Length: 141
Ligand SMILES: [Zn+2]
Image 1 (cartoon, rainbow, N blue to C red):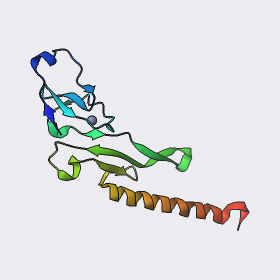
Image 2 (tube, rainbow, N blue to C red):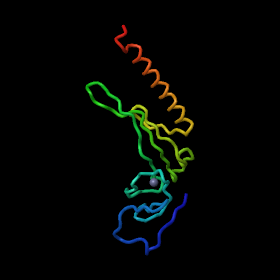
Image 3 (tube, protein in one colour):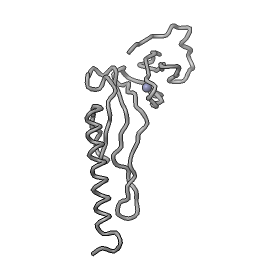
């Protein structure tokens, strides 16, 4: 993690809230332009004007499973993305972790091992769903 405060020459008055270059972003924190590392998996636009460096989070693209629900609607479940909060002061979120939201509720913060275990449970459940469907396929009674 590195932080660079740009010089006045690289801090024009009317510039976008953030700029991105190889491996870094320049963001606006309390009216001050600051350059910080941004990991290659991060898709966060970082266009917010941050009140504090602690509020800076890197987020990857979210993946989810679309499932049918009553009434023909479709909802997203088992959503997950990579996230890190490098300046929040919490060692659990400083390094990249898996933000996992299995049931459209709250995101759990999982290690790679925890996410692997949750994925294996989902795969096992998928096999159970296949077995359930197979038990009545072909008009079985
Ligand atoms: Zn980022």
